[in-house]
Image (cartoon, rainbow, N blue to C red; front, side):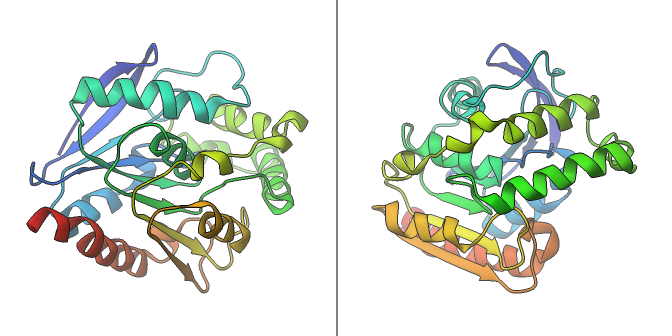
Length: 259
């Protein structure tokens, strides 16, 4: 495993590489709205080991050790990441065969990307296809927590600029213009196998997101709802999440490679 920096989308991005069988697609980890390379902890290493695949984990602009955010994010920031930044990063890292592993915002970015760019499959945790009231309520609660608790200090362990990381995410989601954000049209354009994992007790989204995927996708779709699990299945229920992802990989990806 090693880490370096790659410039994509006009910004210097923190990138971690995990070795594996080069004949297999590369797992590309796309973090949540407050995530980073370090906030994935060792889950990417464990999934790479379980599948045998190489992996790339990166911090988006404004997160982790990547360039600090300059200015506010726009409503289409996930589209920009999916259709401009990630394609450039793929070209620079020569990632022809990939399986994105996206969490929350990262899952939405993965869906948008897969609607326009070739991928072998998608693994999604707590994806957002549209904005729900429960999401806005929880993001508003996060705003209060950031203002009134030590959340900023805790985020500083994972971001060089915790204020930029937090407010860049929080303000755009709470912007009234964001309420109309919807990527169901992109989901309809996905043509690869998809696995979605949702926590039954997710405070940021509901089963309605998986129902929309089941309705909109024209490709093989499997979903797992984990009881007693919140917004981060890979942290809240790591063993169950790892097992579900590995089983899906072996059926949908690994078997095709071996044939």
